[in-house]
Length: 435
Image 1 (cartoon, rainbow, N blue to C red):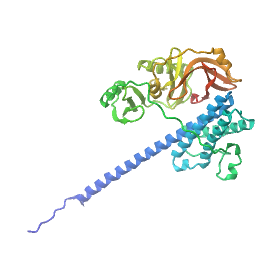
Image 2: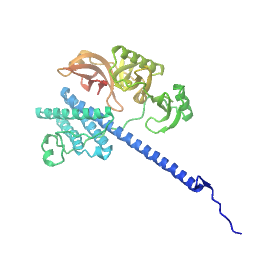
Image 3: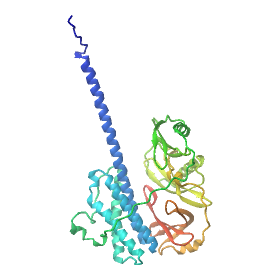
Image 4: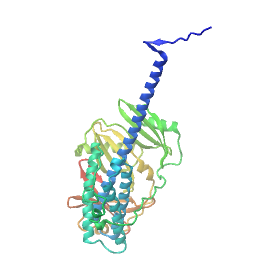
């Protein structure tokens, strides 16, 4: 018997063809979604590396300027060490950028040799030979160049564009003639890497599971439908959640140890970035302080603020017996329109916070004031515990000072009277930055 094959036809086409076309269409759009997702990851990595480079350039510029108010060989050595570290960090960030950014050989040479030059001068100072005027002039030129680069890269970050930039006048070409035009920057030695971080000190030993983490996160945000995104393996292990609805996007991280809030970030309602008035600043600080107290962060001292699109970022440090604990930092993000807290970054606080065994200051405040570099005018003083390494903190007198129109914060060791740290306060449209 002869079998007669039957084909099912739909709209003039064999059904099998339509099925095949449907499958191919689905695969095509899935591939497009995969490619788009991969591109978003690449774009995010590029932006992250670019912003890291911008931050390192800014910190490097500040470190170079601090040299002009560093009055002792020990302080100069520390600043040169910071310049080496920041230069190395900027080189690493530059190497992570795509070729159109990372191939900036002039910038790479500038960063590398700035760090190497700092190493040369550090050895010189440590051997008992102070800096010459020519060397100070060279450092001043380096600061001017680095400040220009920092401003350029920061402007690109603010605008959301990430073009490359070159350090005009410093290693813009790779030929030997150009390089030897600035012989004082040549150095053949290596530069050091920063040490690895220790274990977190501000977390309980007990652990929670995903279910308990979801319960805690949902308790913090009862009006949001949270989705479990996964578990982040790092020095502080977290369970991560997110939500996306008419209230905007939200991401939340709860620590595995202790089930504590490590981080959350929501969406601001507006886009204002103008500096707030004194009255608005007071209201924003009240909102941030109330949130920290309500969620168990204890006594906190505000340090500085930054203004972004629709948001003010208020930085707080823990306080114990009147001493500011600068390692125990929390960033609080407040919506400018609603004055509601829409974000918290407590990583430094969770990493470091615990009860300290604080000793009394040995030298007087006046003795510490006398140790300040000539030209600095102190305007405010406090006691502060500042981190010097992963395992060592130092009790200091904190002096907020001016020199002309520039603001500095200088930390004088409360036991020995030596300079321990210097920060520059930058007043900008984005807020008061302490770097």
